[in-house]
Image (cartoon, rainbow, N blue to C red; front, side):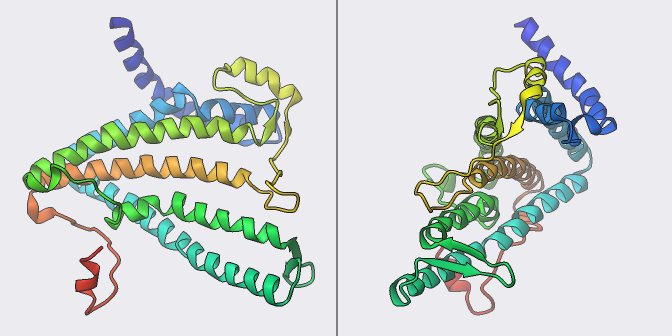
Length: 296
């Protein structure tokens, strides 16, 4: 038990050194003309060292926020603003999905064409099945990149057995515990799975979560890019590696919003009911639509 405690605090202390070393030696991991730099990114992206850098940053931000509540409110506004901005942008993928489906139906059923060409000069010409399967990407964009935006807007489904019957401050305590016990660990596990899942479909030799840094640096000698371009059908969508990237983006955004949700819950708990939804940037359908908005 003592060794585990020492290991924990030792890694928190080393996080400052690791972060400083990465910032002052960017060529070791940003110069992707060097194959070893790629392998360092692969290793550290799913490593204990990276986890403790992020965890220590969270502890530092929390400590400063407890001292200066205005700083913590600033963190909430920035993180929620990031979620809203990304979500509002990629929500337009829903419209693109509908329009593209309409085009596919017209081209396939009315004009009886086997393909669609888009562009000027050098057009992008793909089989109808490619465009049809690409609709999954739009759906993935909405699910992965609009998840935290939906959370900020309060539109996720809540299974409410106890929450509605307790006091305001008890609700905030439940929210704080939920962000720490459920949101953050789930995001970390998703990241750990998705990180190596992504890289196994982008480079060879395939990296493994159990590989040490030295082993990955040795594998770098034989490293080459091998981006997944295999579709489910012969002429179908062949950029499924993008889904792996979106899985990583999803996990990262959920973790960041878990921090924002924890900070907001703490501040509302401390400041009382009058601070509920303070600085919250929620969408509105406009004047006269309040009754409709209250139904969802």
